[in-house]
Amino acid sequence: VLFSDNKVSSYINENFEPAWQSVRAVPTINIDFGNGEKVTRTLHGNIVTYVCSPSGIVIDSLPGLYQPAVYVEQLERFHKVASKMGDPIDKDGFTNYHLHAKVAKPLSMVAARSKASTDMPDLKSPEEVANWKQLIEETIYGETVRRKQVHAMLANHGLVRPDELTKEMYREVLHCDLDDPYLGLGQALFANYPFKDDDSTRQ
Amino acid sequence: MKALRKVGAPLLATVIFAQLPTYSQNNSNQYRRAVRPSIETNAYRSFGKGMVERPLESRLGAPVSSTWKRPVSSLSSSARPTYVSRASNRVEAPVAIKPSIETSAYKIFSKRAIEHPLETRLSAPATSTSYGTPAARTTRLATRKCKPGDVNWHNNFETACQASVLSGKPVLLFQMMGNLDDKFC
Figure 1 (tube, each protein chain N blue to C red):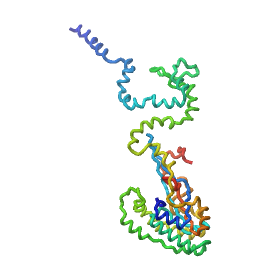
Figure 2: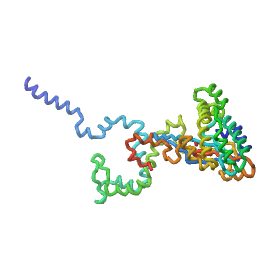
Figure 3: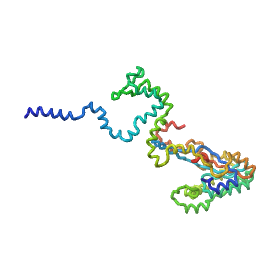
Figure 4: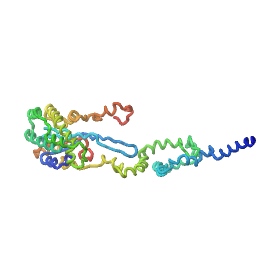
């Protein structure tokens, strides 16, 4: 839905060289009701957006879901930072940027939160999704909490490529350990399950 | 009068008991029909034993099916069953035949393949009015692809970096679980 938004897609096409990458298969949950009825749903869908220099060095990152308007605002800011840093990137300037970066609640989101209805919308149009209260809350959380963690992580790592950050980003910022086959749900699934030793589906 | 009573009581008892079904009659088909009317109504008639077993028999092939229904007396001594139902005189579990079914054909045709026709028949009326067909829902995640938005994506990160060197635009890398061109990701 995010990349179907005309403002988002046209801005990216004009100002970036975009690529997408799958870090692993999306986990699904299947319920077989035993009468021929089967339901399948996705469990996780956490995403990360990186802006990188032409040599593939991460300049900044947006972890998690974002409301389209704020997503574009942040990409505009990243584009300016990337232009200013150039390529190759000066390591001290890069570290200085992330150490002194400030995070704040996007004012447009604070206003939108107060207006957003608590009712579940139909989510049939991109506008309804963009103004969905949960997405607004997610955006505010990303901008205030996750972005702080990203700045700290990048200041600590220095000049790295995205694949060197992926696992840590998912584990520390999105709380989703890619090395864990159960993505952190193992405790909840098996701790009190009496037949866990007989479960032949476990690796 | 006393003599009449002595003769009359057993006579009356004989008449009453003659009206009741005997034990042998209780074992007859008439008794079964009287006891099991609810089972032999709509659902049982529509999805009878024949309809459930037919797919299995057809998959296993005619020779096996005919062997199972062959009278006991016609079987060779090695194929004789350990137990024969007295009611129908049909083979229930011929020891010599069972292993071959459980090893070859049973493994090839799984439980789901055999039961699927019945499940489909039973679930058909309910699903036609509500959430689409079970097959469509089951295959939805696996098969439905979609356009990954209106963004002109490069094939991979390296290609995007090479394009970035030429264009001077920064690279945008979108990482995710699943695939962006899957309908549900």
